[in-house]
Length: 234
Ligand SMILES: Nc1ncnc2c1ncn2[C@@H]1O[C@H](COP(=O)(O)OP(=O)(O)OP(=O)(O)O)[C@@H](O)[C@H]1O
Image 1 (tube, rainbow, N blue to C red):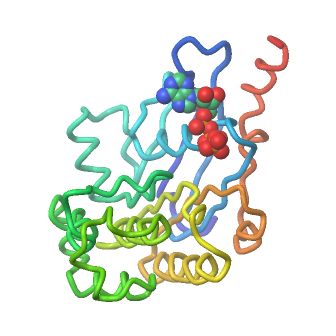
Image 2: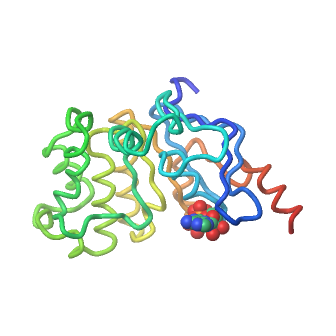
């Protein structure tokens, strides 16, 4: 790994309340600045849970995750929220667009909430990202909910990329796109991350997407200890 890690997890352990075994149990995971990483594994193996831990949405039961050298566990809830909007662009599985805002205002949200993102981004950048995602200007003033699911997915991606966050997390970001759109979307997402020097952690079930990534992480293998506990309990 050439650059210092943007993200580093050590002895990371997390279990959902009531579960027999930990969902996440990872000795060490580091992602370099500007590195694209593909994360995969069967449904229910903990991919979304791990993304939430990496982004400080969930806190570990033990061990730690550091983003740009700062452990999430050392921050209170509102400091974590501020740090996340400053440094992380998150494309959620369900997009999480705000229905009462227009497409453009959804994309501009990170610039509204984060001085750092505002310094690195602009309305012109938001327009360019939407254009590159194939969403033309006739759509920008519509409510986000007046778009198709595939269009909403691309709005969520533009929102994650605006203001050049150091880390972009994408949870199944192409699930609603047809093949042609999927290729164009990935071209745009990966190029935008490369241009911005952003690390990218992308989860997908699609093996065709995996081929684009030099680094692929199979979560059940990373999670060996948790799997061993689950197997012995079965
Ligand atoms: N809020 C929650 N409360 C309790 N258990 C949860 C919660 N969210 C997820 N889980 C459990 O944690 C495990 C991992 O779920 P997670 O969503 O992280 O898997 P995944 O690999 O992302 O799955 P998929 O590929 O289907 O999206 C599952 O057994 C799931 O039931």
